[in-house]
Length: 191
Length: 181
Image (tube, rainbow over all chains, first blue to last red):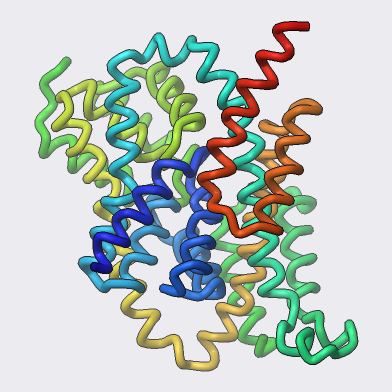
């Protein structure tokens, strides 16, 4: 039963993704590789749409994946799946808020979990990066480095990095601006 | 204060959901206007606390904050009403967009646009990682955990959940060893 399976996958994501929307990406990538419900390339597109539309990124991605897998009921089931563990955990924490906030055990566990969460997001990001910059078909055929790497993509990557990190007036702009810019460059260069 | 109507909670959080781009801290100004100033359901200090807890508990920060405020103003049913409110706009907007996009996905221009957008997504994830790195990799032990989890998730097929649980235990162990010294 696909809906039960969707609910369960997103329940796990909601339970273990610590630190906000981006933290769901490694879980979604794992779901994509394991179930084949959607490809890693589709995941990258979903991230872009989730960043460019209203609403929390994690919820948007759950809705998107759910819709892709099982239509409107799938969207509802995946969204409920990702929020159910949050609701339960917060209702429990809220009833002993002060004890939770000052608990040394919680503090120590999260001292270890926080860098792990960062590493998981980095690893998922490297997966998306390889997908964009490397021509897997040419790599498998043993072609030279110049035909394996996608030069226009690498130049665009460098340009966006410079704009989002080094150019003062651009740094503060909403991600939507950079996503729209990249879409335009993609069309102009027939990427 | 414990007397907010469930329908009010749902609508107020739906408004926050529809006006937030990006989630997380991007939501804070909207919450301050809708929840603190207009409705008086929480104070600025409480919001800051909820965000801090949201950052270090599983789940989506926006959802966690909605559950907290809903529960505080109308009990468990309130927590559920506020949470459903904050996710409702996403459900509608993303479902509409996804159905549109899947109808246009075969057009070459759309494919070229998404090839460009994917490159942008790499940079956005990279920037998020750098920001998180500064806050979470703070000494030699956290650097070791970061490197071990990065290598583990790149080269093994283990579920991310395994790394979260193991690194939580590692955090407990490291702190216990430090206390002994």
